Length: 337
Image 1 (cartoon, rainbow, N blue to C red):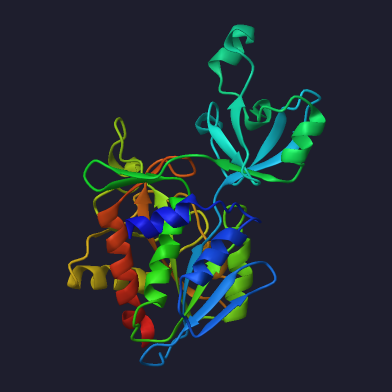
Image 2 (spheres, helix red, strand yellow):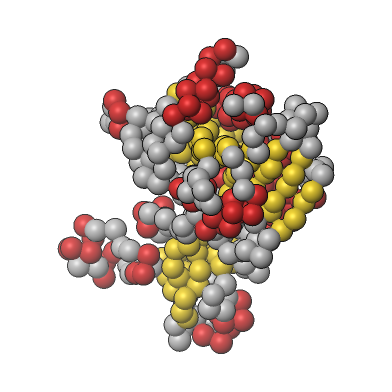
């Protein structure tokens, strides 16, 4: 699991640039039908030992947050915008890797040239620049034309008691769960949507769900855990080490109450650790899925993750396994509802 997750996370694939991730998944699954739609979603059908009463879809997004080059100065420095929601505080001073493999470092005005107010406030993305070592605008344009992508350049590693750090764990963890299910021996037929452009508005899920037309959908995601020093009570949202996170509501979706209860019943009866979000926050592909066509009964099962949308996403292996195990059991549990 660790090796497979590392391979997925180290691939670069921001919204609109997911080809490398999609190709990797295609080459590592064995399914009955594999298609790619016009938007880039990978839609997979895996036949099980039985045909369910309900048409069931699992969804996980293959895109990650990243950066797009927007302008180039005469000196060869690059301006860029965020592709997805990124806090500028996790960008300054970071190494980025360009779409073509070249490297750069994110900088801003030197501190001794900043005003008192500037020193007090974190510069916005539009005040940062990417230094790729170019000596001129013409040289920089060859390496990073406007509209090309850049990505966090960062290591993937294990640390502490079962913790894992890497970029793009949101949502390559969910993708890996679906890959394992596809390559396994499922009891029931199911559809799997590896969606694009989630980070910029759950756009891929909208198209994929319309095409598949499921009755029930399970969104496999990561979700923000704020279980750090100085945070207490409900503001922790969820905690690493306490298992899969089953949501009742977020900023985009009110989840199906019966599926929410069924997920907890299934987890408890199988001794899987499970928890819920203690804050109505965030969102995922469920926001587009549950209102597709005539409506889709939707449930979100997530891996708790610290430092989401940064080069250092952190999850715990035991939580990942809890999500994988619960996702597999929910196929049988929901098949005949």
